[in-house]
Length: 74
Figure 1: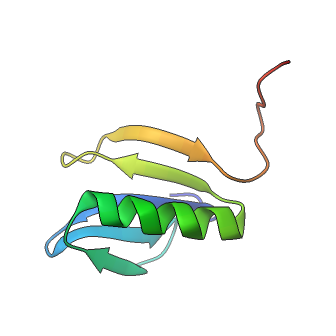
Figure 2: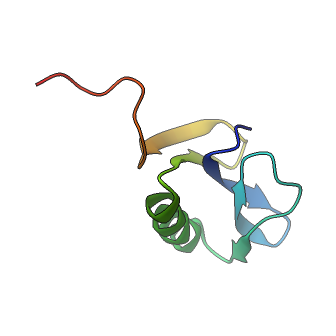
């Protein structure tokens, strides 16, 4: 996991938001929806990338709230 990223991942207690490279989660929630909301808030404040993972660990969605290395044209 990269340093300037936040990840919404499945955990034993529900869904956790974890900074890339961290050993422990920032916060854990009962639902993925709550974790996503919190993850978006942190990512916007830090200008970070947010990775939302499925229950099986695969990335289901990625959002950039910082310096996008490949911004869309137009």
